[in-house]
Length: 591
Ligand code: PEP
Ligand code: MG
Image 1 (cartoon, rainbow, N blue to C red):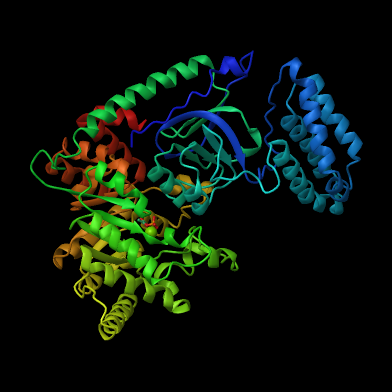
Image 2 (cartoon, rainbow, N blue to C red; image 1 turned 90 degrees about the vertical axis):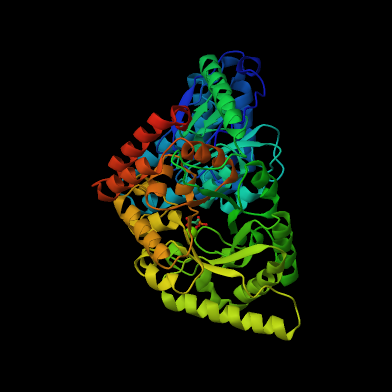
């Protein structure tokens, strides 16, 4: 995506008479684009107080900062006394105030530096009791920090944000992200997460720049800080200098220019230079995304993630509610294919019920997606009833996520048959010919793809999970994100096996994971035999641009090398070199 968002709330100089020091933070790029706005620190800062970065103030700001700290300290005095038994709070107070006054640090960083000194002092003793209290100290200090950052009781509300907001948080869940006030959110940066966590996927579909996996940053920002989020390079810049602002203005205008050129090609076919047609479809998270689908020229919907219908709502949507949503979608798509996935709750997507239940130790290996059909049989039955009934309004395809064994598909097909029988007995119209597909996102499914292909009408490769399960890398965990490599030859081989089985059984195969939205992977996927790709609508322009400039011949050569490469990095270098040579303009915006 080449979308950029820029709000220039006020030139830095107008807000701060003297420019504050620019500070750069690195994370992982989660959603492309660049934004410039004012920080809102959301939720618990969760700093561990190890890395403290003094935030300078002007001499004229000393009294205001001290007053701010004193008012918070009064508010939290009770808890302060109860927990910080080792801290004579008057001493702590004095130290913070003295840092503000003498070191010209703002209230947050003076407080952070002071707490760090206390924690260092504790860890230098052999006192078990004191060492056990360190956790309490961190907790209460985090609370005070939140208050210093301006959170009122209960914190800020994500669905009603001030203008030009950039959210900085320890974490945003997918349901928090779905709730973001679309009018005023410019972008976000969080400490957790990776490129394929659902928070990142949602940011891309909301077209807001985002950076994830920025360990330990929340405590380094205060509400109102001026900030740039560079979602291409995975960087966040606090107090950008005039030079940095000028650099980014220029970068944004270059990207806008290229985007408008690519956008003009949205009605052109995605066809390689040697005449191979590729079907490009859209991934959506709700019916609100339909406008985007038609704007980007998608040929259909390749993945509707229905689990979002179950989040941010006090009760599960009933059959009629779901039936209306699916029918509306099918009618709006006027005969183009609409692939609706049955709920994939679990993992990082929790509904109202599972969010309050006991967390599983390994949610991604636990009760997720179709596995819920034993504990909550009504969930899948209600959804299948609504889907089959809506099927009469268009070209519906239903797909099941997280298939690992043949017996699961057999069981689901049996439920589908029972549901059809019920509908028949109730004289409710439905489409008995709705095609059924399996998501191929667990390595075992790739290895038994031949048997699965004999049972279903299509495959859709979920590369996000396929990479996670093949490489044993939690897709949410920023600490192992460096190992999450979609270009791993093992992943390539599993895709190849899946395509081979699909071809043998003459069923279509689509790739709908994030690898499909990354133009650097497009030629390799074509070379592996994938001629259907589904992605966030705003990624389609670039992917189409690359397809139109590449040949199947070159793609097949690339795929051959990718399959036999020793290392994921070798595949990545190859993919980047290819894009650079066929589409240098697109390569330049990928960063
Ligand atoms: C995938 O796993 O690639 C996929 C498309 O599904 P999700 O990201 O929702 O798990
Ligand atoms: Mg998946």
